[in-house]
Length: 125
Image (tube, rainbow, N blue to C red; front, side, top):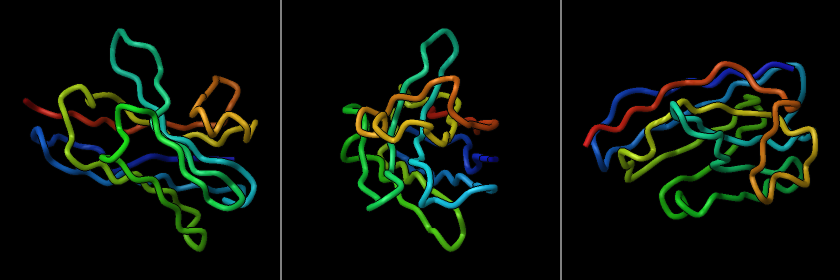
C-alpha cells in the first residue's frame, strides 16, 4: 500500500489549489481515503474523507463549502480541490488509507493507517 500526495504550493489568501493523492497496491474500492493536515506545533487535523463503497464524502467543519474531495478509480487517485484558501489552511497535507472505514465519517486518521509523504500548502495573507 502506497500513497503519495502532490499539488501543494504557495498561494495567496482566497486562492485555490488542487491536491492529488496517487495510490498503488490497492484499489479505491477497498479503503476509505482521507486527507489530513498538520501545521508546526499543532495537532494532526482530519480535513476530508471519501468512503470506499459509495464514495460518500465528509468534511471537517472549517473547510465545508470550500474544499471538495473526489476520486478517479481508473487512475487510483483521490483529489482535494481547495478554494477560498485562508492563511489558517497553511499546513503539510497528507492522504491516508483508513484501516477502519468507520472513522471516515469523523475524518479521524491514526498513525496505524497507511499514509505517505505529504505536500506543503502555504497561504499568504
